[in-house]
Each structure stands twice: as C-alpha cells, then as structure tokens.
Image (cartoon, rainbow, N blue to C red; front, side):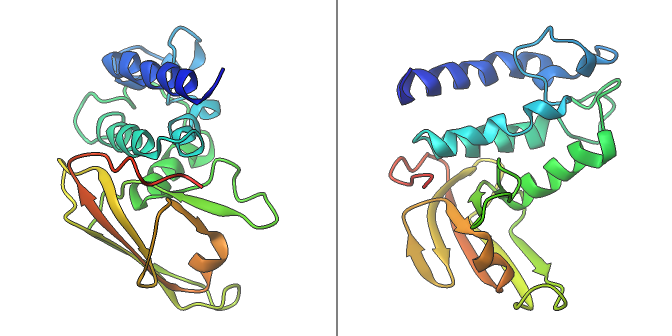
Length: 195
C-alpha cells in the first residue's frame, strides 16, 4: 500500500480512537470486545503506536505515544484504564514505563542485534542503573532538554555527545552505559528518520 497510505490509515485510527480514550473509559470490560478500531487495553495493540518509526514518520509515534501516556493512563477517576482493562502480568504498566522513558522495541528485543526506537519521554531526566552482573555499563542516562506538555517532538538526538539523524539506538549502546540527550520542541522534525 506504500508508506503514505499506511501512515494516513494508521494516523486516522488514533485520531478516531482518541474520542473513546483509546478503547477505554466508561465501558466495562472494553478490552474483551473488538468494537473499537484501537484498544490500548488489549496487549496485541501495544506496539501499533510505535510503527510510524518504521514508515518514515517517527514524529507521529512521538505524538501518539505521548498522548496515550497522558490520556489513557492517569490517576483521576476516569481515564482510559477506566473500568476493566486487561492488565495481564503487568503488561499495560510495563508499556507505560518503557514509553514514558522514551525507549521501545516492537520486536521485544528478539533480534540478534536488537535496537530501541526513541520516543518522547515524559521526564526531563531518567537514570537507569545497570546490573553489573549482566551489563558492562554502570548507568544509562536519558536527558530531555526543553521537555514540557507542549513539546512532544524530538528535534535533535545525541548519543554519548554525538548527534545522529535517526531515532534508533542499539540495545548494546544502552547496556554499555552512556547518555542519550534529546532536544524537544513544539513542531515535528520531519528530517529525523526511524532507521
């Protein structure tokens, strides 16, 4: 179907699904049915918002992942988690943790040389302490400069001080320790690619 049609169709799913809080809200056991285009409360859907990274528009992953974090999840009485989402073994919570720090792999790190795609972190600074029994590094730090509710888009990516033109980072670079620095902004940077 081509990238443009794919991106238009995928984007329209999230535009429409935002109206029902991405498949949640006041519907009891919403996860169990197939009545919505997208249901974040059902685990087979959890990778879909990250697919724009593979189809030339990673800024749409930044937009929709951040929006899902802010609107599906929450502490107020009614949000997307709502009445009866399917929190199997903590998978919805794990998605939120990974997405809110801005790292995710739709393939579950199952490749020989896995890579994370970089998203839109909710935090200004994240420090991941690495277990020396398993990894070479001591810690991996993610810093988001200019991060706010109104600046969900990555403008520049620096890995260990070196700028790169994409939103991918090898798993090995993360577990060897280092720093990922992101400059955030109000408008999409269409020059960054997902590969």
